[in-house]
Length: 268
Image (cartoon, rainbow, N blue to C red; front, side):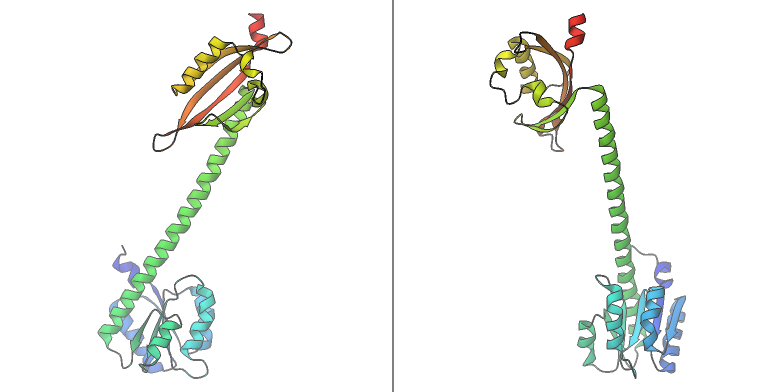
């Protein structure tokens, strides 16, 4: 919602080649409480003025010599590309109303002026314009917040990745079907992925216990299992993992870290 002061503090430009009309509109606006009123009798200056000040509302007379209101709107269009062209046209020609709206004007006021109608249309159009600006500002701030949050998440992810690399030999993620989706380090080598004889190398009891934990979607910490290498030596692996769930509490896989602790086990 808008406060009344926000509307009354909106910037307004009056464009009319008739001084009497300019003075009348200025008086109407001041009597209504508007405080930021500018006027010009030179339509050629409107584009530069709006480019500099970005008025919240332009009261534009359509019939002016040398450059009419339609030409003025054409010059403003690229300044407000994809945005809200804040033009309220003033015309004594009923046939110009539809053409003015098609040219980009948001509303119109007929001559001779009905002062109540003029004030109402100005108030309503300013309200829409300011709300549009608030929405645009909010969207920009939201986009900036999303960009900042994304950068923070990427930085956090990079730190986490680096931490896991320093504290373990490998990191992995797998989907609900057990397929590796993300990993670092020699995961395939450590787990023997792609090796036809791999199932026979595991300690069956230890591997079955690990498979039970995964099937039950339980977290596990520093779980140790072993396997026999092709040369007959034993290899010991230590793995920690946790199940992952989406926002709907649906299981989506596992993630974890692992270490080759063969040297440590042989010393013990």
